[in-house]
Image (cartoon, rainbow over all chains, first blue to last red; front, side, top):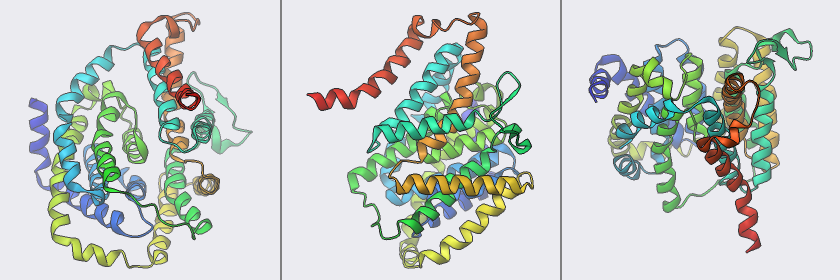
Length: 84
Length: 297
């Protein structure tokens, strides 16, 4: 639990939060555009994450994933997260 | 819930021996290849094809295999070009081949289930190292490319990254909710853009990405080859996700099996005499037999 609250605190510092916002935005765009998918967005960003710190890279991947998936219902996704 | 479950699940997984983990990975490969596919046989074929392709290059105990004398293949196919080929180039080429096919429609029930699976995919990945679906595979890919072993060891070796993922999931979900609520009209505009304008730059980025890891042109050919393979599979109505899952899980499973066999002096019977291992293998067998049992009734 201590580590988890530490992770939340880290997330709300400058760079990680910016990466999260950018990832979500890109994910939403890829999810909404015709012919593109969230998985494609993640695959295309994968080479770029090689040049990042692993923590930042994973936050980016996860936010792309969440952003793209959100187009099928962010509200139910949130409910699903709260439920388990 | 996700946060509360991940660490204990990883702790349980940490107690499993190599035979158990092999059986777990094997069962996972069978389940992901067969469940939810229109054709169980095509799903399994794709999964095992991926596993077979992963055997190329350096083996778990040293020595190289199946390189056909090609120097470039001594480390096997790189993960990055394989992923880009199957997940980016494949759908693009497949879209060209089958451009007349109507887009899949998802109902609200399916959407809710998909969304639940979406959040749920993170848990088995970071605690057990098993990817669920295409996006899970990419999270696994990101872990592997950064030299992080997913599964129970992640919480010990890279606690920051493991808890970072757990913390980022709900925050990202809130951000998504906020952005979606404010930008719906803008997103509707996106849907009208012609496919070609979007797809062309994507292909260019995929080529740059495949080349950039090691600056080898060979990797670009690998990506093109896997893209073509994925497109052909799509045309044959075979799923491509199991191909990638097999490609990524097989080396992990092989390493576990080798470690187990080294401990048991080369006898494989522990696979079926150890109860937890037997349980996982039974799940795999039942998953395989299920469609046939159901049909007979």
